[in-house]
Every structure is written in C-alpha cells, then in structure tokens.
Image (cartoon, rainbow, N blue to C red; front, side, top):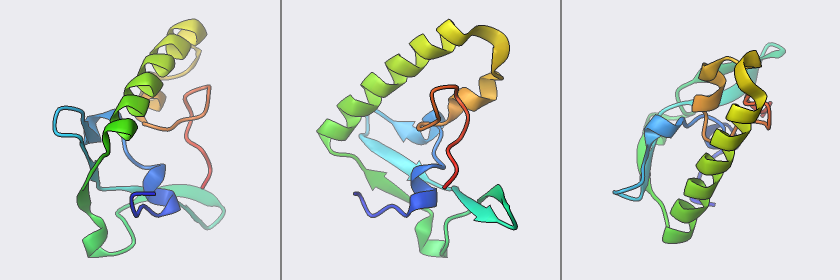
Length: 98
C-alpha cells in the first residue's frame, strides 16, 4: 500500500507524519544486515520522498497514536521514550524486525 517497501513501513517516526498536510516523509528504513537490524536511507535515492496519505490512513494513524499513548502510559518507565517515536512499534514500543 502506498508504494512503500517493508523496511520503509517500519522506519517513519511520528515527526515524519504531517497530519494537516496528510503526508509522511520517508527518509529511513529498518533493514536486516549481518544478523541485526539497522536503520538506513531507503534503497534508492528516489526512495527518500514525501507520500500523500488518504483520509482513511490519516484517521487510522490518529487512532494508532492515541492507542500508543495509552499503552505507553500503562507500561510506564520500563521502556525508553525513544521507542515510542516510531509510527509502528510493537506493543512494548520496540521496533518490529523486518
């Protein structure tokens, strides 16, 4: 959906999403490399781009962000705040493995 590669779906942070402009900036991808996960630029130079989000995706992202805030408050301080900057982390706020 939206022409994103698997690693690009797992890379964006909430700072990359502009709800007013209904867009997201794709600037990083989470990819497996040598048995670990690294954050790189997208696969090609043209991969760094702004994508425009359908209204349904924007509303889904707003709901997701609200759920994440509730989960973060419920879990408390056991998980570092930087885990929660990702748009699509696991329930504990950690990144998914691509």
